[in-house]
Image 1 (spheres, rainbow, N blue to C red):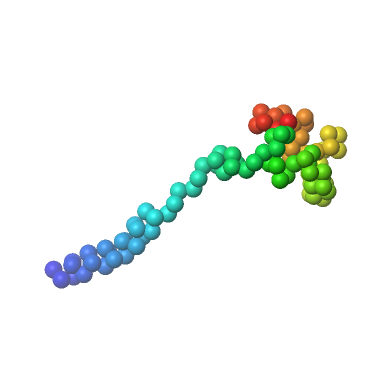
Image 2 (spheres, rainbow, N blue to C red):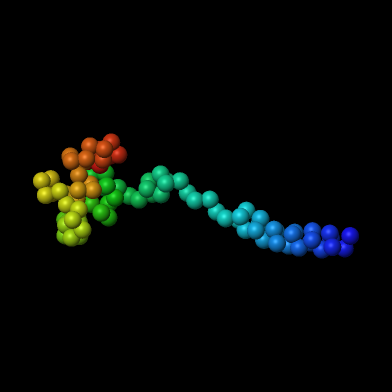
Length: 91
């Protein structure tokens, strides 16, 4: 009888920290709210990454080989080459 009580006590002590730790973990915020918080410029991209608003950023994108020479903007922001970006609001 004493061994059963000891077993129950040990299981309780081991499982309590595990259960309480999982209950306290914050839930991650949805992806859309994180991107919605970043201010966008008139071109529909993040204001701090827009090369049309800040031409000095062009060198950074060119160095990363992310540049559309035909449309003079980063390839990752070129809605003319990538129509799917236009659906997201990039102009």
